Image (tube, rainbow, N blue to C red; front, side, top):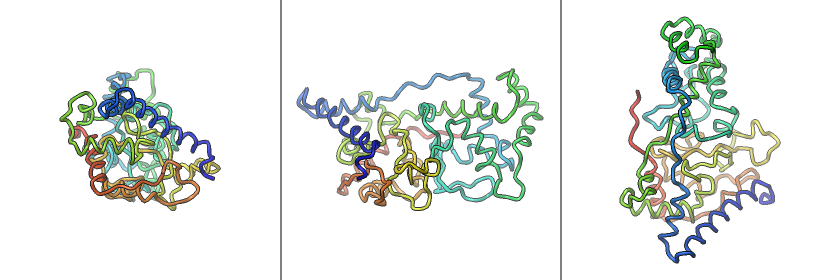
Length: 342
């Protein structure tokens, strides 16, 4: 019954189109080299996004790392998005400004500027990066809302209005804009959109450097785009479709279903994360429920919790130990040089 849903039809179409394209490429030249060449083209990275204003980027970077943006004055955006951990965290859950654990693992900010109009966050509750930053400061993880002494946004705004250095920066950068929460989060979002994926060994291989990745990783790449069906959701050069799927991980957190209560396939659905620098930010899933990449692969083999909302893309796969190692070896090639916090 689930396969009659429109999203199921789309999902099947994605897999079918991908398979047809690969088969055609092989048929035209009669050999696997063309097959790999065709696959590589689907993952050739896009150029960096144009920078709106370097001055705003620099201001946004300063605000991103400044704990004055939080209610307590002790928590920065960077507290949950560590540059040295692929702009995420290596804990299953982050600690919010109230000193309590958040309900989900912080998502990476790598490549968020390329998302387009897709909703932001694991459950898509915010339409833009600006809205996400504003909600975090006003009522979210930076607000101390879980204490008897939450701090009003106006108090946070006044911190920046009364700081001569920031007054000068805002005046030089956005002279006609007031120093308020909307201007602040605009600058933060402009900075976040400049966080590009690092050049990784995989990128060098796509560009023609055959020894950039191992033979195990090359086999893993073929598995990723074939038998393992990873490409169905983790597609394109950022390795994400930017959509929401129930992959059978959660029994209490309804994810996208909180906002879309009447949409069957939105229940327990979470946004597909990018796999860029994925090896740098374990554990995995929205709740940190798989400790390693190998554990994550096994989750997909098991298929997760079987229920009406489970994505039709979660089809049965069976891998042997070598194939699991090859898949992990491939995913490890998606990490670039470590980023040092500035």
